[in-house]
Image 1: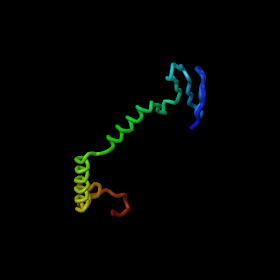
Image 2: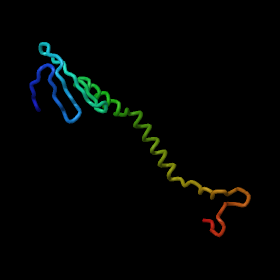
Image 3: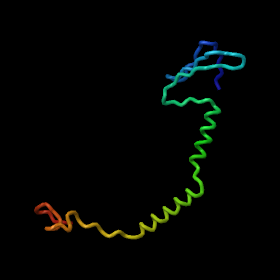
Length: 107
């Protein structure tokens, strides 16, 4: 961990595009400002921890969702075991039968 001493109005540069500024010191509280690209999320630690916990809960499926997915996969597996009838060639059923280019045999 890098530890720096800064006074009010002084900055710390992180990488090429992040600036951390000391705005105010009042007792044991320090107000800082952070300039960073919008694509970079910046959170207080307690907010970040709560977001991580919430995301973890949302990503963990409940038992009913797992059961429904297993049933669907099993049903799809059964459907795959049944061969579908072959598709008729394009144009089949029309008067004159399938269209082909002159001189080219049909498949």
